[in-house]
Amino acid sequence: MQGIINFINSFFSGLWNIVKQGTFILLDSISTIFYMLFDGFLFVVTNLISTLDLSALAFNTYAEWANLPPQSIYLINQLALPQCAAIIGAAMLIRMILNLIPAVITRV
Image (tube, rainbow, N blue to C red; front, side, top):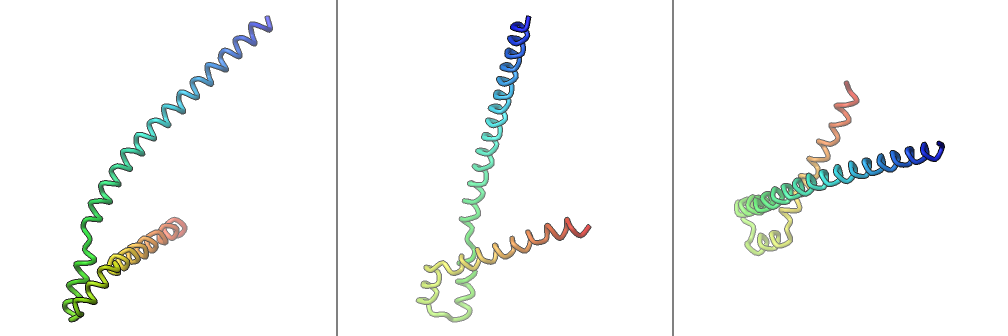
């Protein structure tokens, strides 16, 4: 009698393990599909935004107004200083926005 009970327990234990592993595989597959879709979307958006590099255009306009020599304008553009300034400005803006999150949560 004990052998039958052990067999039933081991059978349902094995069946439960199969269900758990199947659920894990299914959820992992779904999350991987969503990750791939989201990553593809972000790749497209990043490439679209990177084509709209307005920092060099704004700098060239400012440099022409400031009467900088063309050699200086060329050198500054080749060193990517306008893009560097845009990246640093964006990083500072993101940092300021992220610093507001704890303030909103803790000052209720």
